[in-house]
Length: 393
Image (cartoon, rainbow, N blue to C red; front, side, top):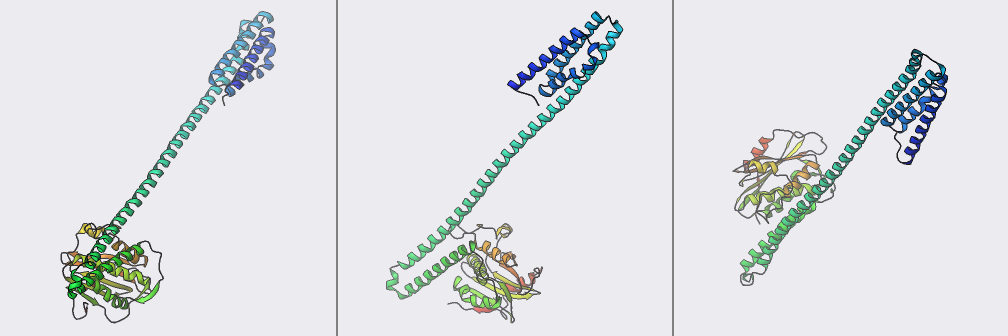
């Protein structure tokens, strides 16, 4: 501990006064006469080391040795001590003074080194805290930027979708031929209905993306597909065949029924976009072990491997601007995984795509069974003996 300011001046004054007093005492009485006080004469040296530092230690030690020399001179002059006796009396206190000074010097040096390390560590800690705060700020900015980017993509996609749908509806609704030709009016109403249904799909996707979990119930997946048949049919044009392959038996599932329906409709809407002119869409269901497996296939253009790897990524879409938002398959993945199932692209080539959904049968809690490609191949084969054709209109 080093004193600073006024206390340091007081310490210097006290040590200086003490050394002057000790020197005067040695000069007057001699060294030998005060041998019993020599230990107490080391107090100013210790005080200097504790309060003033290394430089003060050696200055005080030099002053102490000077005082000892004065005492030796006084002994030689007044007591008539011989030279050898005087040197003997001088050696012991002088060595003691030097040893104490050296010990104090080493202790102070180590203390200064420890203080410096402590200051360096404090500086490093301050720098680390500054870096951590800077990284936290950058991370917060990055998260905010990502949120804003996601919101921008979502808002832009939805705005384009609804703008296109409204343009279609307004175009058909204001067509003057609707008044003249009844057939033209029916076609316009049909187009308006399809555009409105597509708007409903977009709305359902948005509601599902930010939804709170709905009620979990037990229902039959085969019956749910049969009830969805009219909606599936309405998604496609009249030149596209919609098939259902639902064997006899029960396929119980325990999940939110709305989420199951929405997943099927989202996949079907992607299949529709892959078959703009004509094709075949097929929904097949079967049970393998404790898993209910639903395979949805189309005969569209398929998708390359880089698209398959990102198909369930939110806001990822390969559709032209204004056509897709990239949230449909993300909603499918979220719904199925939350129900304890899996969804994946089982097959996708130039002849179409097969989406495989595996869900645990109600009352069962077992992992999905691997190697269900056989069902996917069966579902994509278009077996007319088991498939039910959903009529158009």
